[in-house]
Length: 227
View (cartoon, rainbow, N blue to C red):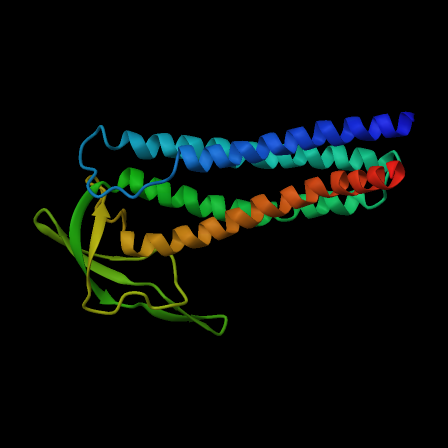
């Protein structure tokens, strides 16, 4: 009877914590979506990326810490001899955080670009910047645009496996007023956002599955015993 009571407490407490974390994730992405601004030339508009970057940093720290805490609980239960599979669940919850870190790093860079590059102009793709790396072909588009009385030619800091922009195409480009070489192209950022979102999704969903695995097994065991 005491074992059943203990398992009920474990199931209720951990499940409540994980459900709370899931609701936090839903609230975070629904309440504070990252939006692409059309024109952000005033000082007031630059506050939005600043706030988004602060929320990004907060979440980038809190989610891994939350997973580590839950994994510690799982390991503790394993040490107590409750279920030797708990240690594997802890690894299942922590290893995907590598993808989460990569995705959040990408999102952080995109937010910093939006915070600094606030002046909109038109740019022309002058080169696809094709390169071979480790036997694979990557594209680093080069853009040419005018800022004030000067013409600038800049290269994309990140490479792409697909040539999204052909030479001669005209695109929107945002640049930083104090340093026009700091820029971003919305047409290319949307592809990076998708990859970042995919990596973050793996780093969020997989740990949740690992954290919930002991409770699912415990619930099934409890139902079998009571049935």
